[in-house]
Image (cartoon, rainbow, N blue to C red; front, side, top):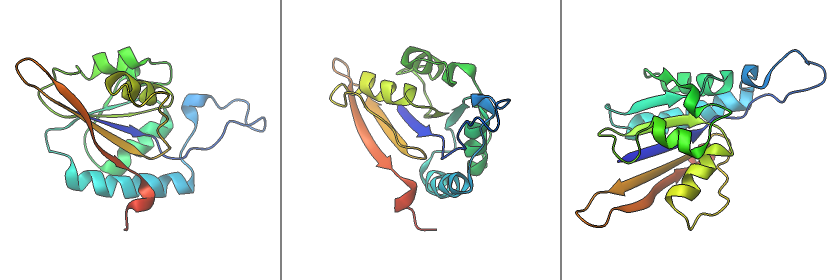
Length: 157
């Protein structure tokens, strides 16, 4: 199974000037839109067409997902209050027959990495970055490994 973790791109900060805005209402900044567009360009070229895309219900993750231009499902289990267990259950790790892309938040995405690849303790995924994890099934010993890490700064548009 392939599990692709995409942290939302840069979003506006909560501020005292906008006390009515909630964390879930935060939108991408101009830089965040550029980050999402660059990463979407790369993902669009490497993601299989069968990839299932699960997105947190926050505005910043929805805007990040929209940059990809593919159908996705908004799933509270990958939202701001989720846990690594919630995310792994939502994507049916490691039993999903198709690749799964999760567009979500820190620290939860980093906790998923730590759970699946214990040598990455206290992992933090930077805004806009993608971590691609694969598990190869074998009869007696499944192997989980980090297939790729991509950052928007490395993508030339």
